[in-house]
Image (tube, rainbow, N blue to C red; front, side, top):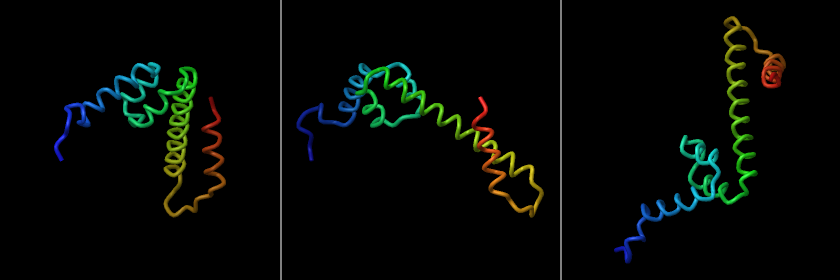
Length: 104
């Protein structure tokens, strides 16, 4: 189907949408979007919230990511320290992850 107007194209719509979002978003939200941490939809929805709330959400997401990385590194170190065919104690693993995540 032929477009009626040049502005009917997705590229033009996306450009104006990004401009509108950029005007509402705080700088940390824009950086998160540009670095690929947020989808366009998430960026749009979060930009509609108050600036203080945008910053709080981005900080919480950043903290969650750091915590997940620390947990993954702890699991890798725990598994690397075991010898071959050694049974894994999930209680020990959970304790190690909990201790690593709770450290400042």
